[in-house]
Image (cartoon, rainbow, N blue to C red; front, side, top):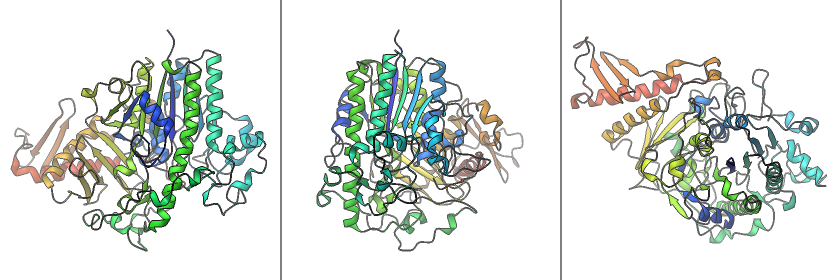
Length: 578
């Protein structure tokens, strides 16, 4: 029996509705075609709205709090098991072309990084290195978004091989010599990294096909991550005057956490969230902007997506031309979302609106995944690794937290997820939030903070009315569901995680004491208990459902949730901003 192939295609920082099939203001004909041939999922969420944590989740099937890559500026431990290793054990070829970002731009002696300076631009090294890297036997990498000075690795070697010996003219200093490009990227399209990713991905797929080898292939695009730059003619494809520009709604942040309100100030002071010896906090700055400038940025952002769409089409068309469509699971998504004016916010940060945490998602497998369908079942990228293994008939490791979504992707919406969780430990102790999302509600808690967010996504899909203070009973009920979900996502630790410094079994605590009260949770029975140890030392009377103790119960649930968050292991510091 022929083994099934897996082709994962990702963009970087793409808002969930920037597909032509969802948004009439943007053109993505190739992704629209893929959606017509497969299923478009409209409620897919990332496990963390930044790059490294989500990308680590994609290949481990675990949350950032479990796999070690808890924030930007950290790295996925090299000994953490990955889905690529599982595929290799089953005789698959594994390859990644484009952006990895499993490691930070700065390394230390204790925490070295293959994706850091000066190694990024040691071209002698990259001429010889093609893997292995986190389960991928073959990798071709770079780290720059558009004209960033981080350009290097295999992409530079490719440009020089193609004859673009003056490539430094198109990149920022100190690597390049051009710091004046804005919106229009002067690099000829044929040398754009989209062309590189498509060409090299197609070459590898052709090689796998010729050798009759099954493959797990990841084509990882960099766009539309800012800075906003795209070659002609894409830079003028969209008229800023014709584009809808989202804006903050007056008063929408009045009941929101203080950081949300401060983003709309001219010179906000976010020092209260800074970590001692910490690194940059994404999004914790003024988000005030000029509407006309923002419209121009959105036009460029859309142009970047349309340009990328062209090269995604080249990959999928090549796969189909080789006769591999019927035997290849193709999945498109992004690592996280993007703000371009929604709620007055720009780019990304520690804000868990759907604009930042939802992602576009399309899955195609003729004969299994329904064609031309839309699904509003809850999806999370943590589930990708076990789902890929499930489709290929391979065993799913016990230490993967994610769930096999094969039946749901194949059209059975009756057994889908009841909730998803989004984590964001942007700073180890000072800036940590988690979000619980079910069919209707979204609850966000901030570690050791009294404030939070509660939105009714059906009555308030734009998330303008924070119910955190207005609906204490609803908040308490959702907090209990959140705590239960946190406990139920636990799986046995991998051997590597058990041996890692600062690992702790305390994150698995299921009991909490406060004053005379003790709260217990029994995961096998999904049952809570609340006892007064003074009046009932033998613990014979369970007060959990007693309405007179509702306030005590709610406080203890939140305290236990915070306690577990605080005890999650931090195996390394943030050594870089990204």
